[in-house]
Structures are given as structure tokens and as C-alpha cells.
Image (cartoon, rainbow, N blue to C red):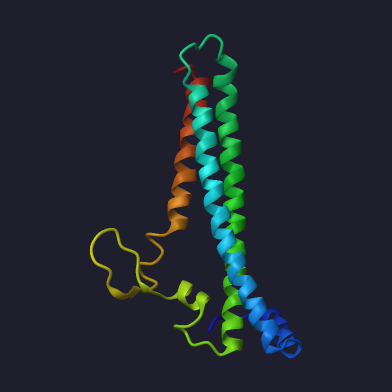
Length: 178
């Protein structure tokens, strides 16, 4: 399955003897629910991030620049801080996803679920791979293409583009180009 450290093996060995089947199924269900809630939180953060940046950008591009000189200095800094903060949340969410994937895979193994039966097995081995156009092709979700068209890459691009935008606005203001 996955390469485990000695510490991870000890945790799993200690947990195996302490749980009955019902507790294992309840833990598995809770982990799946937590994963799904984390996905919702992730996209909520991105949506609020975009809305907040729209608000900051509208203030930045106000026509009366004499009154907004301080705003043209402060708003890019706020935009950079907001981007950095949301990126930290995204990084932590990715770490939580990895932890849930690890634990979910082990619970699926413990429950005796086959690779095509478990939620986390499906998340790891997509039968229909990512595509831009065209009909879905089965068994295309192999590792070679699965990391190109992902939600993580899309979200990272959003944060990168907005970070670059606010950086440019800050430096253009500093050098009096705007």
C-alpha cells in the first residue's frame, strides 16, 4: 500500500486491538465527512478571497487619486497580506487532506474494502482521469496526468495571479507609475 514510518506502524498496531468493527466504521465515516467538509471550507475560503480582492481592487482603482494616495499604498499591502493568509490556510488544508488520506486508506484496509470500494481508494485512483475536452476515457487517471488538471493547481494559480497583481500594484505605486 503506502510506505509507512515505524511510528505510523506503531500507531496503527496500537489502534487495531482497541477498536471493534462498529467503532472502525464510525471513525471511517467521520473521516469521510471531515474530508468533505474540508473541501467545502477550501472553496468557501477561495470564494471569500476573490470577493475581498474585488473589494480591495475597486478601492485601489478609484478615479480620485488625490484622496486615495494612502489607499494606493495600503491596499496592495492588504492584498498581499490577505493572499499570504489564505495561502497559509490552503497549505494547511492540503496537509489535513494528506492526513485524512493516510488514515482513510488504513481504515479501508482494516475494513477489508477492495481498491474500488473505498472513498479514499477512489480519491487516490481515479478511474476517469482529468481532461479539458472530449469524452471521458476509462483508466486514464494514472499518476502521469493526474497532477496537471487539479483543483489544487487551479487554486494555486488564483493565489499566484493575485499575489503577482498586488505586488505589481505596490511596486508601480512606489515608483510612481500609477
